[in-house]
Every structure is written in structure tokens, then in C-alpha cells.
Image 1 (cartoon, helix red, strand yellow):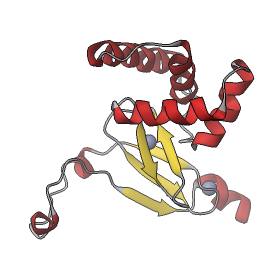
Image 2 (tube, protein in one colour; image 1 turned 45 degrees about the vertical axis):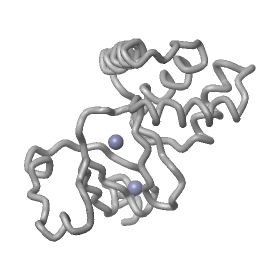
Image 3 (cartoon, rainbow, N blue to C red; image 1 turned 180 degrees about the horizontal axis):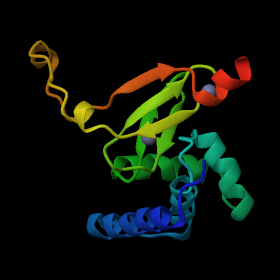
Image 4 (tube, helix red, strand yellow; image 1 turned 90 degrees about the vertical axis):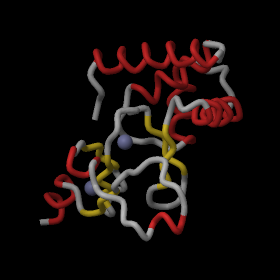
Length: 150
Ligand SMILES: [Zn+2]
Ligand SMILES: [Zn+2]
């Protein structure tokens, strides 16, 4: 699924602002890696991002893309989610949201829910540690896969 042009621009603006605020240089390669991620809601893994960026920037190396993603994650510019296979998947949607993961095709769909944002944290969790963020992951069969099965 494609992300709308205005949403991509919003993500790019936020990206530039956060880089400036954090003193991270806005290099061409960082811009291109982030632009690739900002334009999709597929939650791609690093290898997929590399393959797509390479089409636009043939000189970029796999190592650069992987390192750039790690830097962006460290700086809080992208999210990394361990979803099904344990391979890290990247997400440029920095609005608080939740995931529906299709166990058939592996696609990750973003959704928003105030009720889930407000879920009470069980008291037993405080014994485990301090919660810094929460995200709900639902698993199931997406509509597309359900349709192709019948
Ligand atoms: Zn599916
Ligand atoms: Zn997401």
C-alpha cells in the first residue's frame, strides 16, 4: 500500500527537524534511506529497503543502508519491530499505533485505537520493570488472504 504524498512530506519534514534538533547530519544517503521507508507502510526489512534504495541510488552499499537504519533507529527516527520471523522490520510511522500481522502473508497493517493506547498496565508488570512504551500486536489472517483462500 502506498503512503499519501502529503503524509510522506510530513514524515520527511519531521525527519529533517529531528535530525537538526539531534545534531545528526542530513546526508544524501540518510535522506534516501528514510525516503524509501517513509513511502511505504509495508514495514520492510533491511534487505528489502536496500534493494529498493539501490534502484534509485546505485552507488549505495548494503553495509551503508544497514548502518544508516541502525543509526536512524538509535536516534528515534524510525521504529524497529520484531514481528514474525525475528528479522527486524522498519517502520517510519512514528505516530503511536498498533499492528495487525497477517500470519499468512506476513504483511503488517498499522491501525489506531485510543482504547488500546489507554490500556491499563497490570500491576504485576512493575515487578518486571519500568514500562517505556506499549504497542499491541494482533495476529490473524488479513482480508486479502482470507479472500484468496475460499
Ligand atoms: Zn495476508
Ligand atoms: Zn507500523
